[in-house]
Image (cartoon, rainbow, N blue to C red):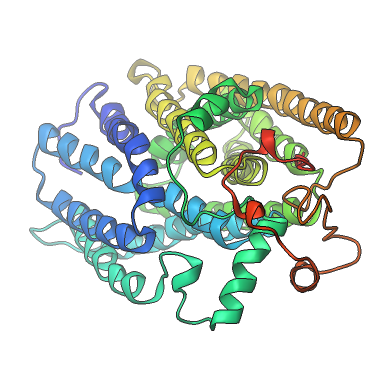
Length: 446
């Protein structure tokens, strides 16, 4: 990074990224649903790679702030785009593990960048190690746009690796056991209003906000914090490798569990944040514990990032209606940005290197997440029971609702969704873009 960052400038360099993300988040969710998705992701990846590479030419605080802001704009499309594609192709049982797999890429990327930083950190030339990192990552990102353009289909009906019959089966799968078709949909104001009036929207929003405030701080200050345990700068980079492996493993594992067991999602959120409460509590009292225990406490924080993909899975599995789901996606990332903007500022320069206030704040945030996740679980369970009483039948948390003449296809415990596709004759109205509130037989995953 450019030298001579003073006071809270380092925190602002971290935060400005999320201002760019926040500015572009809602417009890009509209464009994702309305433009050819894969082509839009391709153009965005090209822009992303250029911005990353151009960061290497920054020489002062102003230039770095500009580059980081544009980087936030570029990255604002990636995760919502992936969420949209995941809900387009996969069933409600398949969504959590798929989100877990691709979201774990963040941690694998952190592992790779740590190795890259360690290797490049030994380069001694006029360019400088930090510039080489941005140049290498920028060019790699730019080149990745090529396979995206050629191999990622915009929608199911354009998938060249499937024949006509397979494309129809793929489309019917998400009607029967997914969250509805995303093709031929339009932006609907009534779905936006419904999303804003839905109580679960604000519970999910609050969970996201409170998990991302700790995330923003620990990501930005991880190397600095590790150095206070008695390690050098390069050693702290290496220590982040097992941290990233742990995070990726937890994200993938909890994603699989959330997909396999439909009543575990909220409980899994609680499970992954509880170690963070303990870890933050220990680090906030670091003067009374040895460095080895402090490092162990730091590794307890590695489970925290798994809360976000679990939260995203709840959005993708429990929201029906393209506009409603994409509006919730935008709100989720508004919370994501807000939390990550605020997080670094808990790390006050005057409290360096211990940052006691920051780790107390992390402990409080994750404790509140436990309360909110339990509240969300009880609310969704109550909602399912209420809908069962009103509709007069059990419904199903695996299917998309009552389809094909009032039948509720039972995907679990007997038949695979592919078998159900061949047996159920869908009606034209089953393909309509309707919300979860208006879908008879729709039951929420807990």
